[in-house]
Length: 556
Image 1: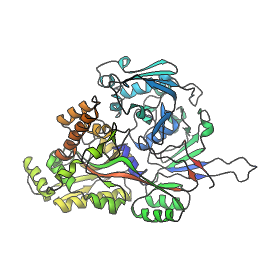
Image 2 (image 1 turned 90 degrees about the horizontal axis):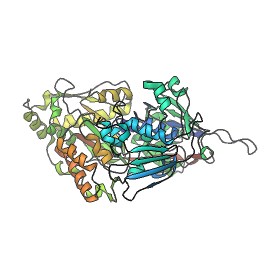
Image 3 (image 1 turned 180 degrees about the horizontal axis):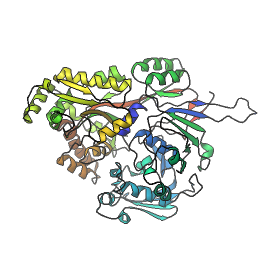
Image 4 (image 1 turned 180 degrees about the vertical axis):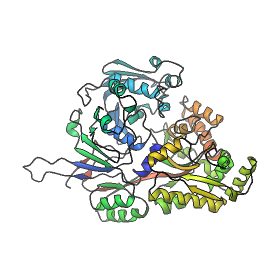
């Protein structure tokens, strides 16, 4: 989930991902008290799945809407669709919907899915995720104004039958149908609210309808959201938690204190708190789970070089590569984060190309250029631009994710690396009021250097490689290379495993080593600490942070 998506994760899932459950029956003869969960979540931007880009927003949508399939231990199982079938080559799919109602008792129909998916592709929506549906027949053509909506490969045959036609066989297609982006939407509700649809306001929330295991209370505010069990949900009897409170808590110290006091029942560990959390797990105070994750964090460069007085230097691939090579990834992982794996590519190790693990077949591209001198490269880049070759005469601007202690620490670490290895005159940490402010500024290219992140939406390298094609809505640094774009275009239609591996390899080498369009920093892993009375808490690898529908409390 990445840009916005993973930066939300760096402020929530990585440092927080926290859940608390309280309340059980006090006496066997009494009715069980409502069960409550308290989660720490980053600031939610929107409830409109067509316009969401961040993990926090997708987390809420995922747990309040029912997609065609739902993820259970990273495998798709029946959701709104109770069954489905495809033709032999996987280009035509038919989904059969179960009886399912919206929270206002109106039925969920196949037309709600057709409308929602086409709305994402509608150029007037300006969805940054429109590219995601380019696998639909004529999806890209509709999004770029070259055909009508009626020609797109999704059609409601009747109220409970949805037919989907793809441009070509797409091995990961079924997995994508559990992604919150593809949740259904009611046309009458969306059009009645207009631009206000999905806004985090009492008025907007009160007018929304939901079809998932939870609904959102209309008294929620952005720093504290309350989900309540949806009594109209078809499987409500098996939803074990009655209420979920989501709080935006930025400081890890606060989260740690709340976790150890059992005010929160799960958290992600890192930094100075990782060792005491592990010690607590060794003493059986709580559970410890760890697993690799298909998530990468990277420095995005404003490749336009047009932000500040002398940042034209970022137009040079050599300058960008020098900045990338100057990052001490091992120290960042081992001393600052105390978790993760140093990244020398953009695609994490768990990602597959059909039946082959990508990283086992393709070496990380930065390895081939690590022996180059960053300062000399920087000087050569300045000369190529016809500029003064003295690094000390230049100033750059770093934009942190928010005003938290962690964001400041990360910024200072990178800046020290760049000053020590290259001798840049100055790197200023720009002010940012909030994560929302960060998102706005990066989307408007009001930065030189900024941390970003992306988590896989599905199990294929395209979820990472496709981000950096020219004009992509998540390509905030506006990196552009015609050769790279051509490779991405070929990858969108190529199905052969060997050919795809080679095309991905070429594209990643251009992005990371030749052009240094971004600077990979680390691949995130998951280190979760969960109190012993929490059962069934899942952290999906793809598309979201957690699944609330499977959680229960036993013996708190």
